[in-house]
Image (cartoon, rainbow, N blue to C red; front, side, top):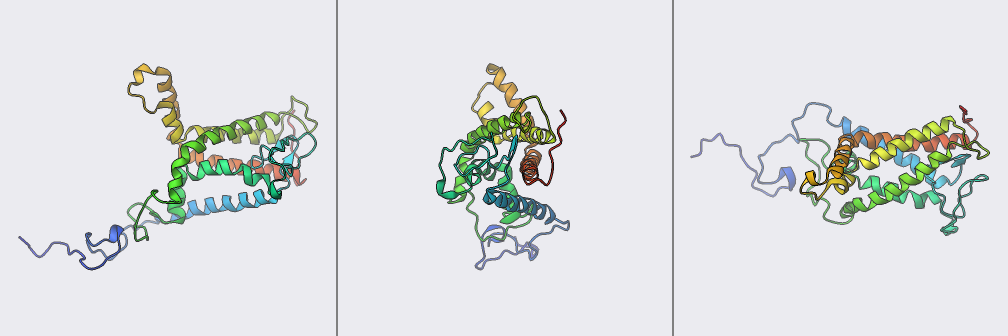
Length: 277
C-alpha cells in the first residue's frame, strides 16, 4: 500500500550507469564533501610527469651512457645507432632499424608491464578517464564495457608482460653489477651512481615480484598448501610484497627515472660521479 513517501523513480529516457531509469532521482552527482578530486589529480599529475620525461629521454637518443653506467631506458643497447662510450655495451642485434632511438624498442616491455599492472590500471582509469574518479562518485560515461573490448581487452596480457619484466630486471641487475667498475672498466670501485643503481634495482625487483601475476604463479591453483610447503612460504613472501604493491609501483617509477636522470647529468658533464673507493 502506497503511503506517498516512497522515493520517486525516473521513468523517462535516462542515461545508463548510476543515473539509470531504475535508480532514485537524486539531483546531486554525489554527496561527498571532502576533496575527493585531490587523489586522482595527484595521480594524473605524477603519471603525466613521468610520461613527458620518459618520452623526452626516449626520443633524445643521446647522453645515456657515462662509464660505467648505462641508462635503464636504453639497456640493453640493441641497435647500431646505440652509440656508447668506449667499452659500452652495443649488441647491434636490430641494425639501424630506421634510425629510431633504441629506447623506443626497449621501453615497450617495461611500459607494457606497468600499463597492464592492476594498480596502474586503477591509477590511470581514475586519473585520466574518471572511471570512476573516486568512491561514491559517478563516472561521467554513459555506459561501461570494462575490459571486454579493444583496446582495454589487451590488459589481459599482463601475465605475459610479467615474464618480460623479469628479463628486464635481470638485465638491470647486470648493469648494477657493472656499476662497481671505474671509468676504465676496472672492478672493485663504487660511486654514487652505484648506490643510485642499487636502490633502483631493489625497488624494481620488489615491484616486479609484488605483481599479482607473480603471486598467482607462485601459489595459484594449489588445492592443498600443506602438500607444497615451499611454494606456500614463497606465496607468503610475495603476498607481503603484494600488500605494498601501490607504494612499490610509485617508488620504482621514481627510482628508474632518477637513475636515468643521473646518467644524463654525468654524461652531459653537469655532474661528476663521486667515487667512494
